[in-house]
Length: 220
Length: 221
Image (cartoon, rainbow over all chains, first blue to last red; front, side, top):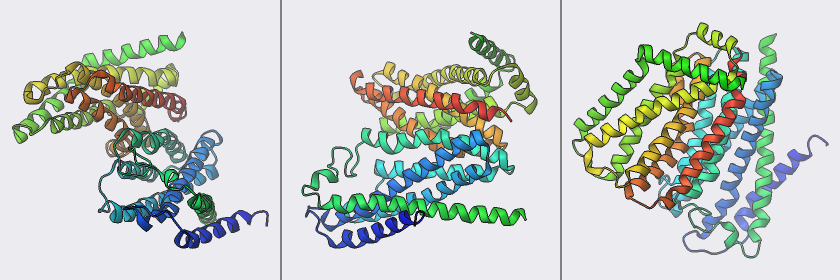
């Protein structure tokens, strides 16, 4: 129970948000209408991605000093899991944009920067594939990962504030805080973020365990 | 003091090496001039000032990737070992970065001169601010590409890796630069550009700081 409680919590929260997010009342607003519910499914993806990439940077820093293969594997598997959430964030955002902005991809700064930051991590994975020697690969990719992380932060959190964007919460557009006068949405949104972060972490631990089992098998 | 001496000596070495062969500077200059000329032949006249600005930055971006990536990629393993034994990693990185900044400053200044000469219809009204953007661009491209070229050279798969690794990192900087340059092209007062200049300085300091922290790990094989 000590080891599984957070998995149960994560699953319960995600199931709760899937049901409550679709059924509970939301503010009626022009243009947004019911699509405001996407908040519960789109935004948590980015939170989960950021958490997973932060875990990856943490293990990259650790692997530089410890030089252990396990830390390197943790770093790469959390990037793998984070990329899934990044892509899901892009897809849920694009579907929402189709119904509110009229196009799946309208080259909004926020969309572009999110796509570029996912590209950054694809570059990381390609860098890993380019190097054969394991210890060298661990070291160089850890360095690139740490070097790229501040740039991703700039891309996702600083630059969109300087550009005009249609995205809620940017470019003078109100964020969800200003719609959610009676805190109905907070009741679903915060559990959704926590739930998806836990699920993301779970995905990462499973991927890591699979990878270490495969490594063990190859070693024998 | 030791570090400053090492840096001074290494910069002197880099400049001397370049001065003897003049390979990088002449090569990249020819690259820039022929690219501008090709653009002139294919566009004949640009339709608006936005395109003028964008084209200039695209040319500078590719020229600086070619110029700066030389810094580590063209060194042999023996040369790298030699400087590893003689100098501290921080001194190597700082000297390379400073040398690249100098190289890029010369290069971009000449490129801007030639570019305004060829495409003279949209020369920005505030040429000084545009030049500030170009100087900031030279500094940012040098700091980012020096570290990325070090990573690419250690990974042992030169050119293609350099492009893949550097583009996602340089895009945020490039967006800020183009915005700053656009302010100059539009002739806005300087107050409107302090945000971008400040952001660029912060990003540069961030890059240099992380590079200095990480480079010693990379340098030691």
